Image (tube, rainbow, N blue to C red; front, top):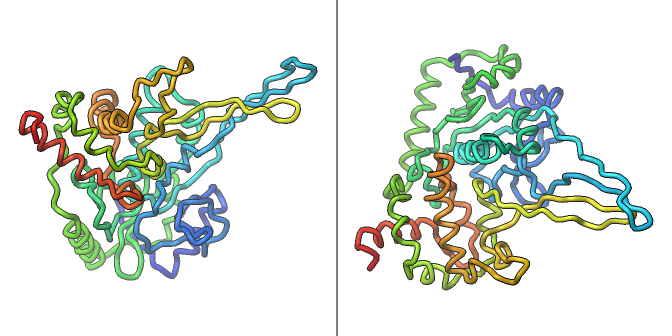
Length: 348
Protein backbone atom coordinates (compact mmCIF):
# COMPACT_ATOMS: atom_id res chain seq x y z
CA UNK A 1 0.00 0.00 0.00
CA UNK A 2 1.58 3.25 -1.16
CA UNK A 3 1.08 6.18 1.21
CA UNK A 4 1.21 9.60 -0.42
CA UNK A 5 1.32 13.14 0.87
CA UNK A 6 -1.63 15.38 0.03
CA UNK A 7 -0.35 18.83 0.89
CA UNK A 8 -2.72 21.50 2.16
CA UNK A 9 -1.93 23.67 -0.87
CA UNK A 10 -3.27 20.93 -3.16
CA UNK A 11 -6.54 20.18 -1.34
CA UNK A 12 -8.68 22.39 -3.57
CA UNK A 13 -7.16 20.89 -6.71
CA UNK A 14 -7.86 17.39 -5.36
CA UNK A 15 -11.48 18.30 -4.68
CA UNK A 16 -11.87 20.00 -8.07
CA UNK A 17 -10.68 16.84 -9.82
CA UNK A 18 -13.20 14.73 -7.90
CA UNK A 19 -16.00 17.16 -8.75
CA UNK A 20 -15.42 16.59 -12.44
CA UNK A 21 -16.32 12.91 -12.20
CA UNK A 22 -18.38 12.46 -9.03
CA UNK A 23 -21.15 13.87 -6.96
CA UNK A 24 -19.13 14.93 -3.96
CA UNK A 25 -20.52 14.97 -0.43
CA UNK A 26 -18.32 16.38 2.32
CA UNK A 27 -18.39 18.51 5.49
CA UNK A 28 -19.56 22.02 4.58
CA UNK A 29 -21.16 24.91 6.42
CA UNK A 30 -24.81 25.46 5.59
CA UNK A 31 -26.84 28.09 7.44
CA UNK A 32 -24.19 28.23 10.15
CA UNK A 33 -24.19 24.47 10.71
CA UNK A 34 -21.40 22.05 9.89
CA UNK A 35 -22.88 19.08 8.07
CA UNK A 36 -22.31 16.67 5.22
CA UNK A 37 -23.86 18.03 2.05
CA UNK A 38 -23.28 18.15 -1.68
CA UNK A 39 -20.23 20.21 -2.64
CA UNK A 40 -20.55 22.76 -5.43
CA UNK A 41 -17.01 24.15 -5.41
CA UNK A 42 -13.71 23.14 -3.76
CA UNK A 43 -13.56 26.00 -1.27
CA UNK A 44 -16.72 24.80 0.46
CA UNK A 45 -15.10 21.70 1.97
CA UNK A 46 -14.24 22.02 5.67
CA UNK A 47 -11.12 19.95 6.40
CA UNK A 48 -10.05 20.57 9.98
CA UNK A 49 -13.20 19.71 11.87
CA UNK A 50 -14.48 17.69 14.80
CA UNK A 51 -17.30 15.35 14.02
CA UNK A 52 -20.47 16.84 12.57
CA UNK A 53 -23.61 17.11 14.75
CA UNK A 54 -25.54 15.07 12.20
CA UNK A 55 -24.40 11.73 10.86
CA UNK A 56 -23.57 11.58 7.12
CA UNK A 57 -25.94 8.62 6.65
CA UNK A 58 -28.09 11.00 4.57
CA UNK A 59 -25.68 10.37 1.68
CA UNK A 60 -26.91 6.77 1.42
CA UNK A 61 -30.20 6.85 3.32
CA UNK A 62 -31.98 10.19 2.68
CA UNK A 63 -34.22 11.54 5.40
CA UNK A 64 -37.06 11.58 2.88
CA UNK A 65 -37.16 9.81 -0.46
CA UNK A 66 -39.85 9.27 -3.06
CA UNK A 67 -40.46 5.63 -3.97
CA UNK A 68 -43.12 6.01 -6.66
CA UNK A 69 -45.67 8.41 -8.11
CA UNK A 70 -49.24 7.71 -9.15
CA UNK A 71 -51.69 9.64 -11.30
CA UNK A 72 -55.42 9.74 -10.66
CA UNK A 73 -58.36 11.01 -12.64
CA UNK A 74 -62.11 10.77 -12.18
CA UNK A 75 -61.66 8.74 -9.03
CA UNK A 76 -59.54 6.08 -10.70
CA UNK A 77 -55.85 5.23 -10.50
CA UNK A 78 -54.56 5.76 -14.03
CA UNK A 79 -50.84 5.14 -13.84
CA UNK A 80 -48.07 4.20 -11.44
CA UNK A 81 -44.57 5.52 -12.16
CA UNK A 82 -41.52 4.07 -10.42
CA UNK A 83 -38.89 6.59 -9.41
CA UNK A 84 -35.52 5.81 -11.06
CA UNK A 85 -32.91 4.43 -8.67
CA UNK A 86 -30.13 6.84 -7.78
CA UNK A 87 -26.99 5.41 -9.39
CA UNK A 88 -25.00 8.66 -9.55
CA UNK A 89 -21.25 8.02 -9.02
CA UNK A 90 -20.58 9.55 -5.61
CA UNK A 91 -17.68 10.18 -3.27
CA UNK A 92 -18.25 10.87 0.42
CA UNK A 93 -15.18 12.76 1.56
CA UNK A 94 -14.03 13.14 5.16
CA UNK A 95 -16.25 10.55 6.82
CA UNK A 96 -14.94 9.65 10.29
CA UNK A 97 -14.29 6.00 11.28
CA UNK A 98 -17.39 5.83 13.47
CA UNK A 99 -19.58 6.86 10.55
CA UNK A 100 -17.90 4.36 8.26
CA UNK A 101 -18.88 1.68 10.78
CA UNK A 102 -22.42 3.02 10.58
CA UNK A 103 -22.32 2.35 6.84
CA UNK A 104 -21.07 -1.19 7.55
CA UNK A 105 -24.17 -1.73 9.67
CA UNK A 106 -26.44 -0.35 6.94
CA UNK A 107 -24.75 -2.67 4.44
CA UNK A 108 -25.80 -5.66 6.52
CA UNK A 109 -29.31 -4.42 7.27
CA UNK A 110 -30.20 -3.13 3.80
CA UNK A 111 -27.73 -4.89 1.52
CA UNK A 112 -27.57 -8.54 2.56
CA UNK A 113 -29.95 -11.47 2.53
CA UNK A 114 -32.91 -12.17 0.31
CA UNK A 115 -34.73 -8.88 0.96
CA UNK A 116 -32.29 -6.22 -0.17
CA UNK A 117 -33.33 -2.59 -0.27
CA UNK A 118 -32.98 -1.49 -3.93
CA UNK A 119 -32.85 2.23 -3.10
CA UNK A 120 -29.98 1.83 -0.63
CA UNK A 121 -28.11 -0.73 -2.73
CA UNK A 122 -28.19 1.51 -5.82
CA UNK A 123 -26.58 4.37 -3.93
CA UNK A 124 -24.14 2.19 -2.01
CA UNK A 125 -22.96 0.37 -5.11
CA UNK A 126 -21.97 3.67 -6.68
CA UNK A 127 -20.45 5.37 -3.64
CA UNK A 128 -16.83 5.51 -2.52
CA UNK A 129 -15.91 6.38 1.06
CA UNK A 130 -12.85 8.61 1.48
CA UNK A 131 -12.56 8.37 5.25
CA UNK A 132 -10.55 10.61 7.54
CA UNK A 133 -8.91 9.53 10.79
CA UNK A 134 -10.26 11.28 13.87
CA UNK A 135 -7.37 13.27 15.31
CA UNK A 136 -9.50 15.18 17.86
CA UNK A 137 -12.08 12.86 19.48
CA UNK A 138 -14.70 14.69 21.52
CA UNK A 139 -15.12 14.05 25.26
CA UNK A 140 -18.37 12.28 24.36
CA UNK A 141 -16.72 9.84 21.94
CA UNK A 142 -16.55 6.18 22.97
CA UNK A 143 -15.86 4.36 19.70
CA UNK A 144 -13.14 2.33 21.44
CA UNK A 145 -15.74 0.78 23.77
CA UNK A 146 -17.82 -0.64 20.91
CA UNK A 147 -14.99 -2.20 18.96
CA UNK A 148 -13.85 0.79 16.90
CA UNK A 149 -11.33 3.56 17.28
CA UNK A 150 -10.39 7.02 16.00
CA UNK A 151 -7.90 5.45 13.57
CA UNK A 152 -9.98 2.41 12.59
CA UNK A 153 -9.66 2.26 8.79
CA UNK A 154 -12.01 -0.71 8.29
CA UNK A 155 -14.56 -0.09 5.56
CA UNK A 156 -12.78 2.91 4.04
CA UNK A 157 -12.03 2.89 0.32
CA UNK A 158 -9.42 5.62 0.71
CA UNK A 159 -7.87 6.58 4.05
CA UNK A 160 -6.67 10.04 5.14
CA UNK A 161 -4.51 10.72 8.19
CA UNK A 162 -3.65 14.14 9.58
CA UNK A 163 -0.03 15.25 9.43
CA UNK A 164 1.58 18.64 9.65
CA UNK A 165 1.07 20.39 6.32
CA UNK A 166 -1.70 18.18 5.00
CA UNK A 167 -2.83 14.56 4.96
CA UNK A 168 -1.35 11.17 4.27
CA UNK A 169 -3.56 9.35 1.79
CA UNK A 170 -3.70 5.68 0.83
CA UNK A 171 -6.06 3.41 -1.10
CA UNK A 172 -7.60 0.84 1.25
CA UNK A 173 -9.85 -1.27 -0.98
CA UNK A 174 -10.27 -2.61 -4.49
CA UNK A 175 -13.13 -0.15 -4.97
CA UNK A 176 -10.91 2.67 -3.82
CA UNK A 177 -8.47 1.92 -6.63
CA UNK A 178 -10.83 3.91 -8.84
CA UNK A 179 -9.42 7.04 -7.18
CA UNK A 180 -5.74 6.19 -7.67
CA UNK A 181 -5.64 8.33 -10.79
CA UNK A 182 -6.33 11.39 -8.63
CA UNK A 183 -3.28 10.65 -6.48
CA UNK A 184 -0.61 9.58 -8.96
CA UNK A 185 1.12 12.96 -8.97
CA UNK A 186 1.26 13.19 -5.19
CA UNK A 187 4.68 12.53 -3.60
CA UNK A 188 5.21 9.34 -1.65
CA UNK A 189 5.25 10.02 2.10
CA UNK A 190 8.67 9.89 3.72
CA UNK A 191 9.64 8.29 7.03
CA UNK A 192 9.37 11.57 8.95
CA UNK A 193 5.82 12.16 7.72
CA UNK A 194 4.78 8.61 8.58
CA UNK A 195 6.24 8.97 12.08
CA UNK A 196 4.51 12.32 12.56
CA UNK A 197 1.16 10.78 11.58
CA UNK A 198 1.74 7.97 14.07
CA UNK A 199 2.35 10.55 16.80
CA UNK A 200 -0.95 12.27 16.00
CA UNK A 201 -2.67 8.88 16.21
CA UNK A 202 -1.21 8.14 19.64
CA UNK A 203 -2.35 11.53 20.92
CA UNK A 204 -5.85 10.93 19.55
CA UNK A 205 -6.15 7.58 21.32
CA UNK A 206 -4.98 9.15 24.58
CA UNK A 207 -7.80 11.71 24.37
CA UNK A 208 -10.44 8.99 24.71
CA UNK A 209 -11.84 8.53 28.19
CA UNK A 210 -11.47 5.15 29.83
CA UNK A 211 -14.62 3.06 29.50
CA UNK A 212 -15.39 -0.63 30.02
CA UNK A 213 -15.86 -2.28 26.60
CA UNK A 214 -19.42 -3.34 25.84
CA UNK A 215 -18.34 -6.68 24.34
CA UNK A 216 -20.66 -9.35 25.68
CA UNK A 217 -23.35 -6.94 26.80
CA UNK A 218 -25.88 -8.69 24.58
CA UNK A 219 -25.79 -11.67 26.96
CA UNK A 220 -26.27 -9.39 29.97
CA UNK A 221 -29.33 -7.77 28.42
CA UNK A 222 -31.13 -11.09 28.01
CA UNK A 223 -32.00 -11.20 31.69
CA UNK A 224 -33.06 -7.56 32.00
CA UNK A 225 -36.14 -7.41 29.81
CA UNK A 226 -38.46 -6.91 32.80
CA UNK A 227 -36.04 -4.87 34.88
CA UNK A 228 -37.27 -1.64 36.53
CA UNK A 229 -34.12 0.11 35.32
CA UNK A 230 -35.85 1.02 32.02
CA UNK A 231 -38.46 3.09 33.83
CA UNK A 232 -35.74 4.81 35.84
CA UNK A 233 -33.73 5.60 32.71
CA UNK A 234 -36.78 6.89 30.84
CA UNK A 235 -38.02 9.19 33.61
CA UNK A 236 -36.59 12.33 32.05
CA UNK A 237 -36.79 11.30 28.37
CA UNK A 238 -38.87 13.74 26.29
CA UNK A 239 -39.45 11.32 23.41
CA UNK A 240 -38.11 13.99 21.05
CA UNK A 241 -36.31 11.45 18.84
CA UNK A 242 -33.23 13.64 18.45
CA UNK A 243 -30.92 10.77 19.46
CA UNK A 244 -32.22 8.53 16.69
CA UNK A 245 -32.11 11.19 13.98
CA UNK A 246 -28.48 12.08 14.75
CA UNK A 247 -27.35 8.46 15.07
CA UNK A 248 -25.22 6.87 12.28
CA UNK A 249 -26.76 3.47 13.02
CA UNK A 250 -30.49 4.20 13.43
CA UNK A 251 -32.41 3.21 10.32
CA UNK A 252 -36.09 3.00 11.25
CA UNK A 253 -38.45 4.49 8.69
CA UNK A 254 -42.11 4.95 7.85
CA UNK A 255 -43.80 4.72 4.45
CA UNK A 256 -46.83 6.82 3.60
CA UNK A 257 -48.87 7.76 0.55
CA UNK A 258 -49.30 11.49 0.05
CA UNK A 259 -52.12 12.95 -2.00
CA UNK A 260 -51.11 15.59 -4.53
CA UNK A 261 -53.02 17.43 -7.22
CA UNK A 262 -53.90 14.89 -9.90
CA UNK A 263 -52.43 11.96 -8.03
CA UNK A 264 -49.91 11.35 -5.30
CA UNK A 265 -46.64 9.80 -4.24
CA UNK A 266 -45.32 7.11 -1.94
CA UNK A 267 -42.60 8.42 0.35
CA UNK A 268 -40.20 6.80 2.79
CA UNK A 269 -39.06 8.97 5.69
CA UNK A 270 -37.03 8.45 8.83
CA UNK A 271 -38.95 7.49 11.93
CA UNK A 272 -37.96 6.88 15.55
CA UNK A 273 -38.57 4.13 18.08
CA UNK A 274 -38.67 6.92 20.68
CA UNK A 275 -42.00 8.20 19.34
CA UNK A 276 -45.20 6.91 20.99
CA UNK A 277 -46.82 6.40 17.59
CA UNK A 278 -44.00 4.32 16.12
CA UNK A 279 -45.53 1.01 17.23
CA UNK A 280 -49.17 2.13 17.45
CA UNK A 281 -51.43 -0.41 15.74
CA UNK A 282 -54.47 0.54 13.68
CA UNK A 283 -56.58 -1.09 16.39
CA UNK A 284 -55.28 1.41 18.93
CA UNK A 285 -53.11 -1.15 20.72
CA UNK A 286 -49.49 -0.20 21.36
CA UNK A 287 -47.09 -3.00 22.37
CA UNK A 288 -44.69 -0.35 23.72
CA UNK A 289 -47.10 1.82 25.66
CA UNK A 290 -44.62 3.95 27.61
CA UNK A 291 -41.18 5.49 27.33
CA UNK A 292 -39.69 2.77 29.53
CA UNK A 293 -40.63 0.14 26.94
CA UNK A 294 -39.29 2.33 24.18
CA UNK A 295 -35.96 2.91 25.93
CA UNK A 296 -35.69 -0.83 26.50
CA UNK A 297 -36.27 -1.41 22.81
CA UNK A 298 -33.69 1.18 21.80
CA UNK A 299 -31.05 -0.42 24.00
CA UNK A 300 -31.97 -4.02 23.21
CA UNK A 301 -32.07 -3.33 19.48
CA UNK A 302 -28.62 -1.74 19.39
CA UNK A 303 -26.84 -4.03 21.82
CA UNK A 304 -28.67 -7.37 21.66
CA UNK A 305 -30.87 -7.82 18.60
CA UNK A 306 -28.58 -6.37 15.94
CA UNK A 307 -25.48 -8.25 17.18
CA UNK A 308 -27.53 -11.43 17.07
CA UNK A 309 -29.09 -10.74 13.65
CA UNK A 310 -26.31 -9.06 11.66
CA UNK A 311 -23.20 -9.42 13.83
CA UNK A 312 -22.68 -5.72 14.59
CA UNK A 313 -23.70 -3.36 17.37
CA UNK A 314 -26.18 -0.67 16.39
CA UNK A 315 -24.02 1.91 18.16
CA UNK A 316 -20.67 3.14 16.84
CA UNK A 317 -19.73 5.30 19.84
CA UNK A 318 -19.87 8.65 18.04
CA UNK A 319 -21.46 10.36 21.06
CA UNK A 320 -23.91 12.42 18.98
CA UNK A 321 -26.88 11.31 21.07
CA UNK A 322 -25.06 12.50 24.19
CA UNK A 323 -24.27 15.87 22.66
CA UNK A 324 -27.77 16.48 21.32
CA UNK A 325 -30.00 15.17 24.13
CA UNK A 326 -31.87 18.13 25.66
CA UNK A 327 -32.10 16.39 29.06
CA UNK A 328 -28.56 14.96 29.06
CA UNK A 329 -29.42 11.28 28.88
CA UNK A 330 -26.06 9.60 28.37
CA UNK A 331 -26.00 6.23 26.61
CA UNK A 332 -22.64 5.48 28.24
CA UNK A 333 -24.26 5.67 31.66
CA UNK A 334 -27.09 3.44 30.44
CA UNK A 335 -24.58 0.80 29.34
CA UNK A 336 -22.68 1.02 32.61
CA UNK A 337 -25.97 0.68 34.48
CA UNK A 338 -26.81 -2.44 32.48
CA UNK A 339 -23.44 -3.94 33.33
CA UNK A 340 -23.87 -3.22 37.05
CA UNK A 341 -27.46 -4.44 37.07
CA UNK A 342 -26.51 -7.75 35.48
CA UNK A 343 -23.55 -8.25 37.79
CA UNK A 344 -25.74 -7.74 40.84
CA UNK A 345 -28.46 -10.07 39.62
CA UNK A 346 -30.87 -7.28 38.74
CA UNK A 347 -30.67 -5.39 42.04
CA UNK A 348 -28.32 -2.47 41.30
